[in-house]
Image (cartoon, rainbow, N blue to C red; front, top):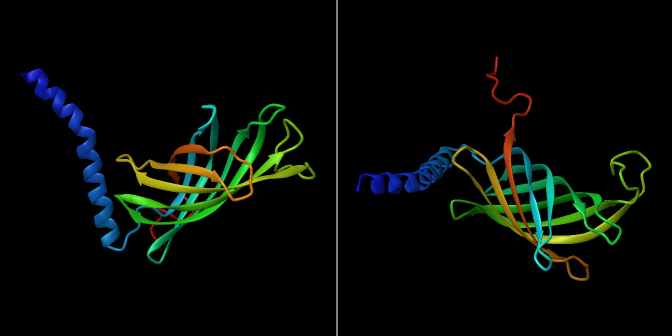
Length: 185
């Protein structure tokens, strides 16, 4: 009986922590504080729904409070699959969201910038690049009890674009920006 109670308590602990964190985030927001705005270093995976192929994705996401909602922007990098093999690709996007189900949800538009010189950074001067498909996404985000931002995206091609639908999951930590955490003089 005792081990069963202990097991139940261990199973309930993450749910309790999430509920306490969600309540704390709601209190912070009600007090005029914003628990979401900031820059986050993120890492995750994108899964092609048709093939099941998984690729890494990483970079940063910026959330900014705008009135009753949030603006989102992302600069990410992945290895985009092509017939000649994966190519380093920048994933650049922006979106908007609002409070929903204990977190944020919204939509985003993304553009892929694909390298055409294998092994060379797409940011390097004079490197040829190809603008890839435009993607639209529905996203949901929440803060985990430890403050980690968790974002889930359902990605589809814009009308007229060729892109296999995917699902992306990102997890990231807030990056302290210059001037944050420093008391004014």
